[in-house]
Amino acid sequence: MPLGLGRRKKAPPLVENEEAEPGRGGLGVGEPGPLGGGGAGGPQMGLPPPPPALRPRLVFHTQLAHGSPTGRIEGFTNVKELYGKIAEAFRLPAAEVMFCTLNTHKVDMDKLLGGQIGLEDFIFAHVKGQRKEVEVFKSEEALGLTITDNGAGYAFIKRIKEGSVIDHIQLISVGDMIEAINGQSLLGCRHYEVARLLKELPRGRTFTLKLTEPRKAFDMISVRSGGGRPGSGPQLGTGRGTLRLRSRGPATVEDLPSAFEEKAIEKVDDLLESYMGIRDTELAATMVELGKDKRNPDELAEALDERLGDFAFPDEFVFDVWGAIGDAKVGRY
Image (cartoon, rainbow, N blue to C red; front, side):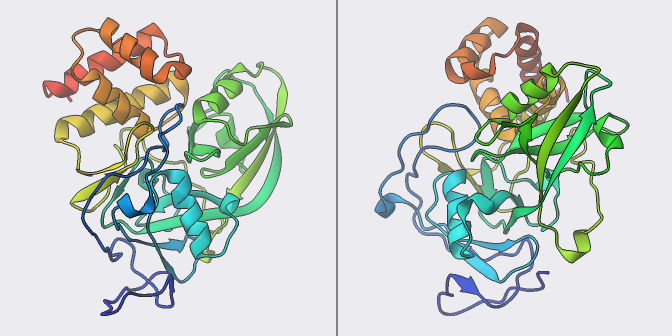
């Protein structure tokens, strides 16, 4: 696994031969400018990306999580393009990249790449490993799963609740991609769609999950994680700035969120898990951005319907979101 990254006087090739230390990846930053549209975090289609000449030269270092030389990637404007650049660097089919973690090769859901990348973050790409098919008896209404997605068509397990139905099935682990339920393909589905399908499965019956686990490095074999702990907060970068990939409008290089925004995003993300069985800090950040200037829950509901109508948020959820944003704003954490 990564050991250390030295400085070079000349620009290194696309794939370097030395190994790199997580969290100390080199960065080449040019003049910031407008980036293209599309990205993860919402059901809308993004704007078309600008021509390459208008994109800032933000260079990130990356490795495959199970072990590889170090690659350099640049020129992406959304998560799907990021995966494509990683696949190109390591000569893989783009469909092999499942998700990325920041500054760790482990399947650590606290470090999952969402809609933001710190300008000094080191990216680890997790690729497809073993496929498996598991039969699950739904003895309870809640399975104990929290679902997220990679922003490019793959939904996977972000958390398994201790003592739940799924927790008792050792073949199912955090990081597993959910390919199909009862033979119905879920490739291309968003996390909230997969969570909804799991909730709608009838209690007292058996269903089949087709899963793909991320390829493991030697030190990760036989390790089963329960996922990120509740209230662990958004996965922000370690650098002084962050590249934010938006679902609508241009991606931008920004300062890190304020303390109020960080806490509000954390609280809204907890509400998403409680009501919908998903965690998505980019979606939570969008909701905080929409709600921080709203005077009442009705204004927030109208804004959410206009921007995120496909999620069909219930009224009680919107009210709780408005309250969570208000509590964070006045410092009631």
